[in-house]
Image (cartoon, rainbow, N blue to C red; front, side, top):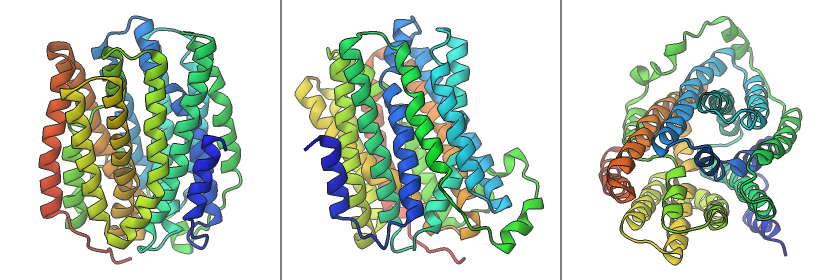
Length: 410
């Protein structure tokens, strides 16, 4: 049995079909094909940038800036989606922009051009994310949010297994020929666009009446002022963590510096996503039973262990174990955080709340990635990972003490 097929069957084994609706399936398939395209390139981008002599500090700034573009646009377009009472146009436009942007990156090996195109790709993510997550939330109940978002993350991350696998196979036959991969990545992105055309949404009367509201650009970030205390406590702890959670590209650069080949680095990234894909849905189901908070804290403990391990050790065997733990971290936090936010937010503000959090998170990511690049330049890789691992312990203590689950009144 092929590996992707075994993953899919393992997901179906645990799958209560009454929870996973047609819309959830379609959104998950859209995310799967988009991630095939994105993750085909993600482990290759730092290798490509180094091959055209872009320094590591600039790589950190590039990734941080691109994620900041995504985050700030998530806030604006999330609020716009809530104001219009529409989700689907944002989903279709966002996925379309990202699909078109990927092959453009290879046209000109210039830092300014790559900054622009990478930002365009992330803008597409910003346009679609709040609306897509609101659609997922609308398809679930508070008791099934962990399962729904977990299933979506599993399917999404299955794409992150297949994409790097394609890149690995291609680079095996055509070593260091990175540019062609950017063109190949357009085709799964096109498949994602076609799946968005099958989606349907229902627009309520109240939502139609909201379409006349204007949305200033800064209002989504301003949601922080009016958010509930439960939202602020949760988002505050997660944002503190985001300040030390730099781009995953630094993990790839770390194992490259530790002696891994390009093939081993990409293979390690595939393994991480494999663990992530397999674990997301079961951990989502478990979170619905034992509580979202417990699974979130478990994930952050896994992060601290991973970064501490990268700071203090090296070797292919250690890297493999750490990437497995890192996959559990991602599975226990990515979907769970969104499920938690949507459960403590009124339904009419779901996309805005996710957009607000994502926007602030991306600003923190800009700082984290830029700072990591500077620290790496000054002191090497060890302090980058040691600082992140130790600081995560503070975030765990804060969330354990102050983040509580208070369901929103819709």
